[in-house]
Amino acid sequence: MVRTQIQLTEKQAVALKRLAAKKRVSMAELIRVGVNKLLHSVETVSLEERRQRAIAIAGRFRSSRSDLSTKHDEHLAEIY
Image (cartoon, rainbow, N blue to C red):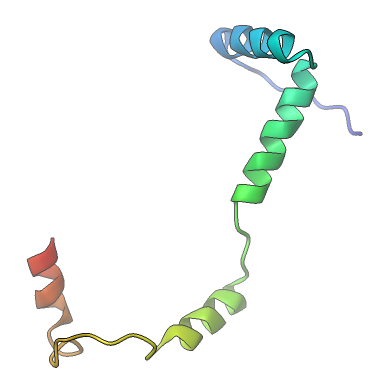
């Protein structure tokens, strides 16, 4: 493991200490769990992958409007 330092607000530190005591784990363990959740929730997709996904989705959906490609701004304005 790599040792690191972080700064918490007083409120965060107190709440974290209480939760650690309640769960009978260290504050460091709670922080590691939180970091893991954050890292798993952030999807890191390369620009090329995003480009390929956009190309793959093109033309896969249909609309009941025959003028959607020419009047898309007007249709969006109606929605918003």
